[in-house]
Image 1 (tube, rainbow, N blue to C red):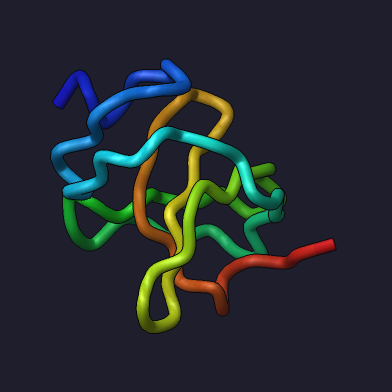
Image 2: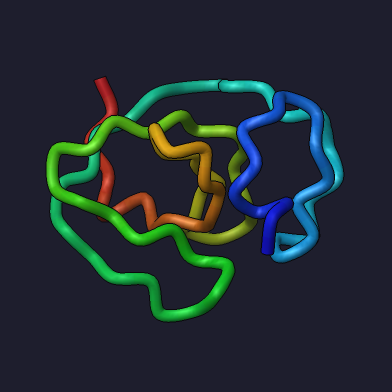
Length: 81
């Protein structure tokens, strides 16, 4: 889905059902490599830098990687500074 991989700062991200303005609220580093299990999940590579866009209810955050892809990531897989 093109919208899910778009790097535009104000974009509708339908695969995440996310329609707020895209703003970086924090940064994090992936603690381990994890493939995505669902289309809305962001696959991780250990050591990868991620922009945290929003927090969700539960233990996931919405992140953007260096390729401009968005998706859900469990907080337990991230290191925050």
